[in-house]
Length: 273
Image 1 (spheres, rainbow, N blue to C red):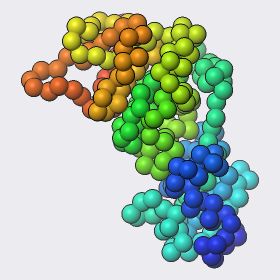
Image 2 (image 1 turned 30 degrees about the vertical axis):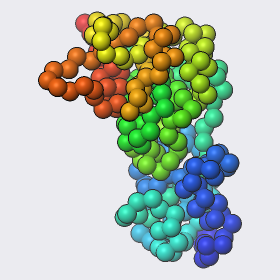
Image 3 (image 1 turned 120 degrees about the vertical axis):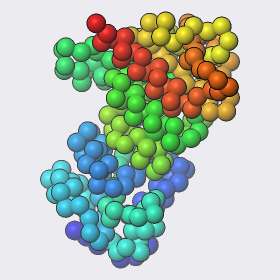
Image 4 (image 1 turned 90 degrees about the vertical axis):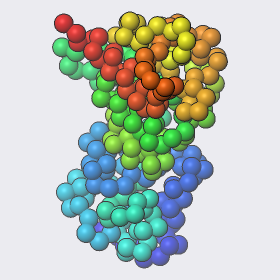
């Protein structure tokens, strides 16, 4: 294992830059921190390029990375702390390349990967309309993965899913769930129409209760910005507007909670007897 002894080391400087979105975009790379997430990446097609270790790190992960031919680097705790995004670093961090999908690749990959014939081929999509909270975004991606959604579309203006906080919040789902970026609501709507997806928006008022709507397959569920909700373009062009009934004086639910309710309603409908 080669040692990094200076902050001027070329590999180290490039890794530190990845804490900023500007450089993640330029390099098309990001950081994965901690043994559990790195293990998930290695086991689920995460494109890990470099492993950087310090102190008492997880030997099993290191051996798995070495077996995969990944470049290994070591450094001291002072330099590692500058790389870390956590208060208590676990001594192991990876540089990984972003997965970039074409439109066709995004829409077809889950079909290629689908081997469990007893379960439906994933066909639902979650759409994030300019969400900002890292916890919400990571939780929604994790829930979409668990609920068997085929992927997520992120509208331009949504927080960077490769930021350290979102990578942690997604808890490994970022390596399994295909993600596709779109520029505008119009671009997103055209894409969904082209591939015969029903556009489902949450909206108050006279909307239908979510459990009265068929969410089993070929749905695109739009989750709106935490402060402003779903944008007008999606509301106008949606096929169905749904609401989640609430009692008392509550006006709205947390975005990740609302997304989870809707995504797991599609699971309930698919498997109800």
